[in-house]
Length: 298
Image (cartoon, rainbow, N blue to C red; front, side):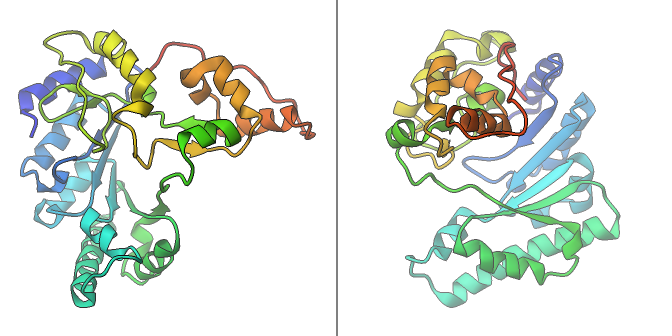
């Protein structure tokens, strides 16, 4: 757990950068809901002045929190399936049906309770339930639709792992790698800037604010080197690493402008450019202008 002093130091440094406007609270070794100081940390983030404050949780420990206060300090609360439950729901897993049903019902009851509190107190925070893609999502969506106060939350489907290797994506489809190293500043519980908010392999750290400024850490040579080589080390096997665009004509753009600037093309604009390159008529000529200012964290 990050100390209040270290959290305050990081929040204050980030607030001085006008392009940083969102704080995500999430856990790797444990769920944020297990933190006894979760509401206090949320209040600190709110008082520092961040307009968007997002809590990512699997629901573990969330029934022990002051639910109304959690809604007041975070602008979005996003629930996802606990890892153990998600694994048990996979079709090739063998799990006790009674235990599985009990765990799933418990997870649904947590969501229903949060929806009831949000509705009863007419709280403005957004309540989101994220479920996996595929056949599993159909059953879960149906179960969620049967809950009371269904109108108080919305359901989103998460992206799954790519079916193709990175090499195959580059060779045949065109690709867009995860944008987190160019859009998100991540700090671990020890207060060190780290490479990702995921839990893939051994985490990599780039130093803390006692060693360099926030901008110095973000633009430092060690993080630049990690961005360049991440597909060969810490990011291998991460389901969120890359999403296929399935357009061979985009490969040349990716190779000519580089990973960072390729990320700055909106998806719709990429599709228009691919249509032009492949000879498909478009209603309007696609603008090739891209956002060229230095990397900025969101």
